[in-house]
Every structure is written in C-alpha cells, then in structure tokens.
Length: 480
Image (cartoon, rainbow, N blue to C red; front, side):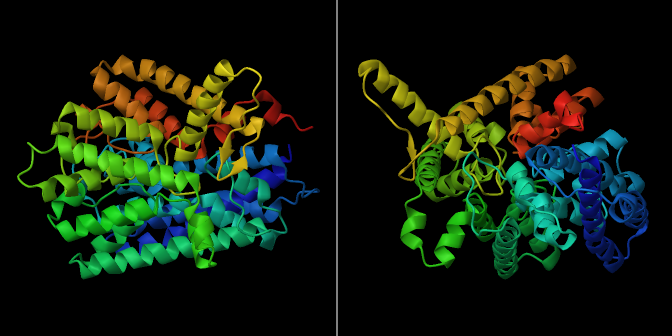
C-alpha cells in the first residue's frame, strides 16, 4: 500500500472541500449571518490537509486498484468528519454525532435528517446541507479525478472505485476527460433546473437549494414539509421531470450530445427504468383514486413520489405514509431497486436488477435444456461471468447488511416498519421511509449507536460496499 500517495490524494481532496465551503460562507455573509462556523472549519481543514499535500513526497506514483478503493473509502469518511464541523460550530445540533449523521446523509445524497425544525436554521447552513448533495451527487472523487493529472497521478482506479453500477461507461480514453464531461453535463442540467424553478415562481435561494438537492438526488429541502410546502403544481412537475433526468445514466446524455441517439435509446437499462416508472405511476395513481378528488391529482402525486423514490431523491409533496398499503409497499420496493447505473441515484441499480432477472431466467432454461448454452446479454453484448458473479455477491451482501443492521437498530425498540425502512432507506440513499421515519418524520429519536450504524450504511450504499469494506480488510493495510 502506497500510504504516502493515499494521504496526499486525501489531503488534496480535503482542500477541495475547504474551497467548496467558501460558497456557503459567502451565502452567510450575504444574509448577514455569522461566518464563524465556516471560517473555523476551513482553517481546521487547511491545517489537516496541507501537511500531506505539500510535505509528503511519495517515492513512487504507483496507484492501483487497492489504493483506489482504500482512498475512496477514507476520503468519504473524512469528508463527513470535517463537513460536520460547520453544523457543530453553529450550536444548532444536539451532538457531534447528529452533525456527522446530517453531513454523511448530505454527501451520500441520502437526505435522512435528524432536524425537527428545518426552517429555523441559518440560511448559510441550509445552503451547505443542499450543497453537500450537489457535491456528493456526481461524486466528490469524480471532481478530484478531473484535477489529479495536475499532480501527475492517474485517476483511473479512483473513478473505478467510486463509479456506481456493474458496467462502467467510459466516455473518453482518459478518466480525467470523462470526469470533466460528466461534470459539464451535471452543471448544465442543474443550471437549467434552477432557471425553470425560478420561472415557476420560486425565489433564487429556494430554486438553487432545491435544484442542488435534485441534481444530487438527495432530497434536503429548506422547508419542513419539503416540496409540498410550496403548494405549486408547476414546481412539483418540474422537479419530477428533473429527478427522472438525474436518474438516467449520464453516458446516455453523452451519446445524445454526440449524435448517437439510436445507440442511446437501445439501452436495456433505460428501457427497463422507464417501463418500471410508468407502471409504478399508473398502479399508484389507480390505488389513490379514493384518496384524491381528481385523476389529475392522483397522477401528479403518484408521479412525484415514484420519481422521488426511484431516483432516491427523497423529496415529498404529500405524506405518503397515509396512503393505502399497496402504494407504500410498492414505494419500498422502488427504494430497493433505485436508479440507473452511472446516474446520481442510489439503490441496487436497475442494471443489476436486470442482470439478476436474466441470470435467473438462464438458470430456469438450463434446467429445461441442460445441454443448451445460454448467454446473459445487456445492450446486445454478452455479460461476463465475473460481472454476473459480482452482481450476485453485491445483492447478497446488501441483504446481509440490511438484516444485520436491522437487528442492531432494533435495539431502540421502535416498530418493525420504522426499523426496517430506516435501514433500507439509508443503505439505498433514499432518506424517508415509513412511520417514524416517514416523510413527516425524522431520525432524531434514534440512539447514538443506531445513528452511527445508519451513517455507516449510507456510505456503504453510496460507494456500493467495496471501498468501505476494503478499509476493514487486513491485507489492505499491508505495505506489500
């Protein structure tokens, strides 16, 4: 393990976090609030990051898969540790664990909160909450990878360790070029949503914070009742559309921009995702026919909540915890599935679900026709057995983590629905669950142990297990 290089990259990334805090610092000054929480945090990060960046000189620049996974896991944990300091210095939170939970929820784009009175927080802190979504959505390491060539370091393994999904889409030969393209598309869609929300009647502050939360598919709002506070159907429709847009693999947008529209539309995952969304909206709208007065309202509320859950954003326009059981169960299923690979959304990912379904189909065919050779395909190309094996292992690990964490969180003695959906929504990076942690609730009542476990699940879900699990591997700490 090249520890000096790992620490240097980690320090460099923390400098990016310190630079990012200058924006909420400016927002605090703009609204006449105290800049002390952000100033103190920036100084602490600079003191911690400058030593490895400027004083550590690695003899070798070798950076392979082990270093990549180890670095990604370490950076995401430290981002939560330092990113929580503005909340802690503001004295608006009960404990540092609460601050850490809120920050990890932000960077992992989960959107789970311990706050009971959101609208009472300073504007600068609320901006930082939403900004953590935006930074974490495309991936902190994607931004870092775009800048690492300036240090003479290859970023291929860094991208590989953080990129979501079983199949990687390489846009350009160099990872740093791909990172710049991804961030350009990400920024363009964010700005477009800000302008649409502003035209729809939101003020600039609300438009920016909600667009950043949508882009990162996070779900933090500066309102207690989330998007439902605005009571504006146009705003809900705009956010619905953009939640779905940010749920799509960004490689699709690159193909469209380069004129390869037919190739983009041939994506099996995209078709699976759109069909799943359409069926879910129709099913829930039908189930809500006795809840709302008109068919239009049923479709609008169903579309918003389906888009919110399947994209793992976690916004709410209504308290769906009061909906019929069929709708709630379907939303929990969508929580598990999540968005497309290569998007800013979380969950198991549609591509994995599709591969699992096709693998199961192949096993059934092999029973019927033992001598037949059957190949699992995705987008017309055969999928390797190693990819299928990794997908199956990921699914099994996910289930083990859900059950194991539910047992620990169950020590708090909350209801089965609260406990299980709290665990599922955190590992899937969705945010709200059901009952106590529903859209009208929060995670404040959980114990310190449960908050730490749920925070751990958020990071595991965002990084798709392996980078964090590498941190706990004995072999990862060996030098050779």
